[in-house]
Length: 267
Image (cartoon, rainbow, N blue to C red; front, side, top):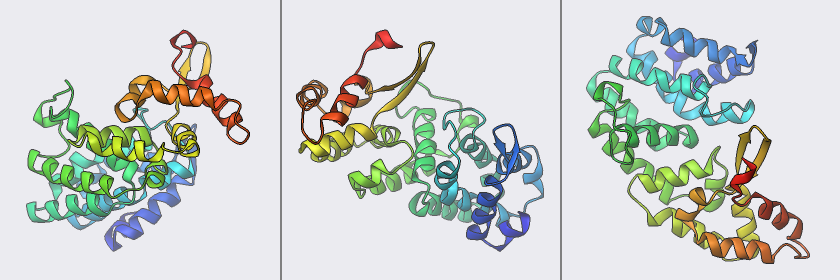
């Protein structure tokens, strides 16, 4: 792995995915063990060049790792979480000029838009730019000026995405909220409203925005109002889906969606 990180970001990314394909113990892969080893002190033996390549590699392959072997993105010990924890260890090992270049490369070119979105949302909240989760500076992943640059880059990427590209991400709902919380409230709403004009588009959109809820009563698909209302007229959409339940082509899909609309008694 160290040799791959020395050779380049592409090589480091391929090596990491190879390790992610190898089972270690329980639900862990060898990639999980590698990231933990780096976090536990191995990062101190890496040269700045290796740190740089590893950071860029993470921005390229984290979504692919998720697609290959699904894990809970929000689990504190997930591969995504392990990768996030390396950022405040690896970034400080770079000279300021190289650090700025690496941050820009990660957020402008990284293919792992889902993982990058999770970092973006984390920092937007940690810096107090949205919500009430302001954290001390020593718990930030990026400096204020870096977050300014990241926000510019991520909003530009979101604004250039099609609905199908958004839906192809590991967590489309999180991406839409990141876009909104980053300062562009109308952009994600325009995208979604444009995609639900037709009945087919409405059904497709809601299928991609369905969340999975786990409770003492089991596992449920849910279309929660709090997740959808910022991006569409929730009441209107609900009525449209109910009206489609007997549609010749869309009826079965509409009935599944109708059953997923908010019903807190199930949870």
